[in-house]
Length: 228
Figure 1 (cartoon, rainbow, N blue to C red):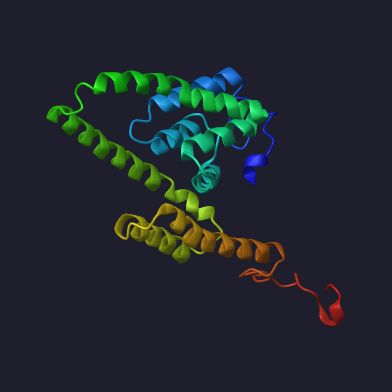
Figure 2: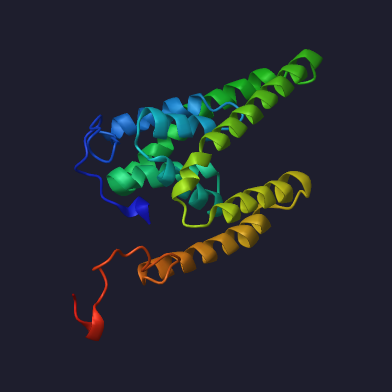
């Protein structure tokens, strides 16, 4: 998996190394995830994608999609799983714990404080309306983040019609049919994973579609098996 790649020699802001950078210290990792978590009202997918991919360039879009998919499958909150993987990528287990601490410490304090304050006004109609308005904005942010990740599918091994069919089926299963996420992941996710695994195996063995085509004159073997 790409998450196991060693990036210890990379330096923050070095655009010549895979067009990406890396956190320079554990403290920078901590504050990066702290700032990320403080922006995540109603969901952090769009914020994580902007901070880690677009702004800091600690992950490429393809790597983000792959690791987010793994975070979805693993038990627990998606962004918590992702923080552990990103921290471990650069600093090992210490980085995973520091990223997790940055993600949870300040939000925990804020949530506990707001819970005490909100308890007295939770039945207020104006407050309930404000909460509904914030949820609508959060849903729009999540949808926008998903659309921005679509271009990363160009490098996916699955054929384009299959990719977009899987996207449509996933939407129908979750949004319309209300099927539980775990069954969608096991069903469609497992099918897509097995299909991609098979295609990658064919590509590595030289048996994939288009292998061996397009050779110009003189590039194949001549009569008798020798090279002309």
